[in-house]
Amino acid sequence: MNIYKKQTLSETFSIYFDRRMVKILLLGAISGFPWVIIGSSLSLWLKEDGLSRTTVGWAGLIFAVYAFNYLWAPIIDRVRIPWLTNKIGHRRGWIVTMQTIILISLVCWSIINPVANLGLVISVGLIIAIASATQDITVDALRIEQIGEDEGKSMQAGAAMAVVGWWTGYKLGGVIALNTAEFFQKFGFENYWQITFLILGIVIIALNIGLMFINEPQLTDRKDSQRKTDKMFEDKIGSSNFIAKIIAWLAGTVVGPIISFFKKNGFNIALAILAFIFLFKIGEAFLGRMSIIFYKEIGFTKSDIALYSKGLGWFTTVIFTLLGGLFAIRSGVIKAMFVSGILMASTNLLFSLLAWTGKSELLFAVAVIFDDMAAAFATVAFVAFISMLVDRTYTATQYALLASIGTAGRTTLAASSGALVDWLNGDWGIFFILTAIMVIPSLIFLYMIKDKLKFND
Image 1 (tube, rainbow, N blue to C red):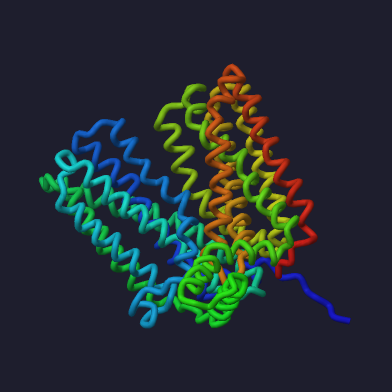
Image 2: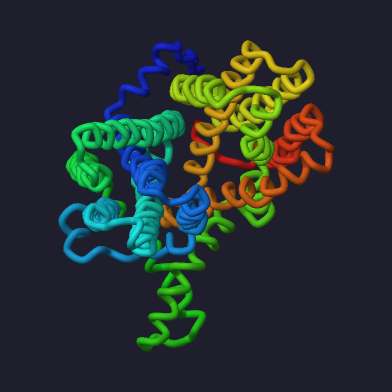
């Protein structure tokens, strides 16, 4: 009879000291850094050069490409970058190519006047966004492939480190960008933002150097599986000429990942998984879309919101992301999903209490801290969950598609959040109760499939 001893907390925490976690942290930073460039840096550059808030707002539409990167994810799985793939690997070759495009774009920005060439500035920003969104596809694939398919605990720890890495790249990039711009502005440089973009280019180079220390597993099975899928489509076409091979390759590239997902899980389970992913974070999205308006309406100032919602948010997100990873490791990803879903619903109720009691800085701080805790737990569990679902033959495509389905649920349905508040005649308490209830359908789907999912926790 075998006796299994439950890991101590220190033994569980030691998973974070696996060398691969440092590499995953760096991959997260590589993914998060470009958001600073096309987010706060671009917005402030345009505003300080005299462009209107409306113009700055419309410029933010370039972020929309992130919601559609799954459309070209199959290409990332199949197409090899000439020369680079042979030298540094398939995934790293794609990342370096996208980082090079971002670097060239930053050099272009450094010589452009946004007032005289706004269209060109936005076009270059769009190129950066597309390169960054493409990079995210292969970064996520390389992150997942760092961990073996049978290492569930390491996958969950890796999900936590990826989230921490993303926020580190985003926040650290913001610190570098803003301090650099202010430094050159104080020294009287009129083109201080253009100089700043060159400095950010140096950071891109440093990240590429760091990337070379991340090993890329050579998954020979992936190529064999892809060839078998192509052959299956070729046989169905009933011909082996050049045109048939092209059609079979395209079908294998685009349809193969979908067939693989449904074949691996079964049709009914696959549909339930997709429904769960689509619905899971909708309540949180409704709250997030309206939260800052709620804060203002009950009397909090912008400085209050900055202190409690943004300042505290950074520290609590990082801390609770790591703790969320530990919880997922010790309890298993399915239980972590249930707990984080219940936490999200419960913390939304704190905002109902804040709405009914009126302005209270203490209750505001408590609500924000617990909301960040729930969001961090949910994000880690969610990233680990979909990471463990993917077939290594189509890592990039399946992860991008599953992540996009989750994003679609949050962005499409949450667009009606303002209309819901208006329909409730501004009754914020009832609104937040409804956002708590919204998590229930997703947990029902998860309960239906919990015994059917074969995760190596």
